Image (cartoon, rainbow, N blue to C red; front, top):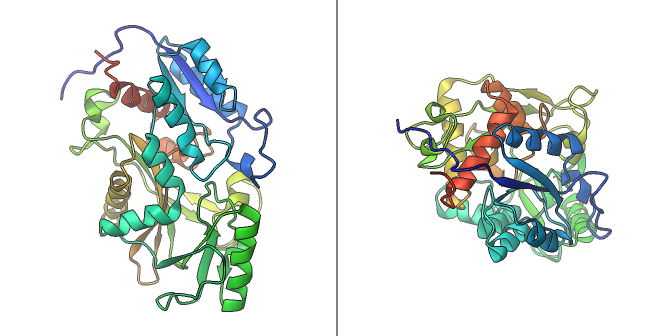
Length: 356
């Protein structure tokens, strides 16, 4: 194993985020603040970066960001901005940082745009032979239902994250309910509705961390496998007895972990080693297929016959300590939240030759 590469000097790191209660919520984007981060999450990220002697500054991810960055001139940005408007909003900050020639963490522009669009993501996965449920995009809501789609079906916005637009009404059992739900999604979220076969099996979420040469730049090189990715514990999300049965949607994602009606989270999941390895590899394959960088979280469900099937990928996974799915997975791996932050930071910095 090669020696760990270190920064030549301390960096000035800008942490970029949308913050609940501080970032203005767009009036024309329903539920937009569901994706914003809490001040506690920002503080935890900044504290982890400062542990290595770096100077850290928080910069809000809003319309003032371009001027703020030009004045601040950070060495690198730790980016978790969800974006404010548009159908590829998670790509806005990576594009801005590319324009300003400022290094940053996590996925680049194209992948950030693709990942938020569930339909395009699924089409790419299909081209790689990766398993996804049968699906159809409804733009007007009047399209004829494809013959390969059988009820029950699942309806959700085509370009949202954090479970937005997903609740108990997302599962539909007949065409009349389908049409009504599709029109609701199109009108409320001003975007197409994605309709797919409802996967009735167990639901898992899998963290992905690394890339082919990750051990060269990691503080934890021995945690990476030969292919450069950590094999993190698989987390199971059981929403059967939740306030939205069978649906891990926005309501559950903002509830306290121990509130009545919350989903049951089990990490590591109670599954055998074969299924664990299968889910981990499927998540890595899904991550690589869309060109994701360094970190992501992949959601997978079992079909009725038990086949692991990809649902979606989040290339800016939530990082709330002891709360977000990825943070719970890292805890189960016996790593700290600070370990997660610094792995993402150093993997990002290594892409720009900042370690030597």
